[in-house]
Image 1 (tube, rainbow over the protein chains, first blue to last red):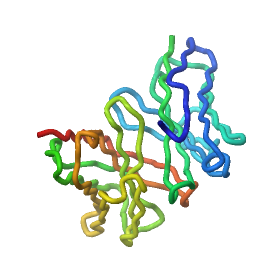
Image 2: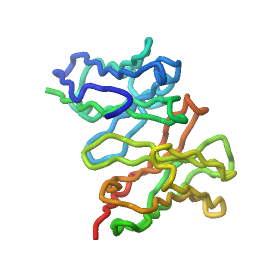
Image 3: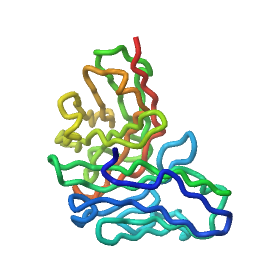
Length: 112
Length: 122
């Protein structure tokens, strides 16, 4: 069981908007720690998509956006494209049990 | 830009020690400002952070793996390494090395190596 909870799967048609949630608790997201997001295309390493809750690295399309509120965070993808089909992971820090970087269980995005 | 590449045996016997090396190119580990991490992904599963090292040699490990993990750095070779002792089949995973940016609690990983699959089996 991951400390951060993500839906196992989401789907959307090309051009649509989808959101992926990442739910934590008072010892991680709710404690004010940042949330970061990664995209993992099939057979490849994860790639940084969003850092510091809502910042996009250079080269990441502005179709991707992140937000955080309370004990949860969200990744939104607008103008869905076939190439967005991938696994998405959130990451934060948990201060319980001596502290550790933690990941969500991942969400499989299917473009219909 | 900075690139990372993992290397090491793809097959390790149960109870033995898993050893991997990450070679960094396009930047110097010794320049400071970054931490260097190991992360693993069990087949078909999510990601698990293992630990990090700073160029000075200071380390921090995932409490759940701490008793079996050692991460070291060789600045002369621009490499850092992972040793995981007493492995079992549960340690079968793709192992990634990654550069860690940001302070503890606010850190993220970029870039990542391509990953290397390590299978624990007799």
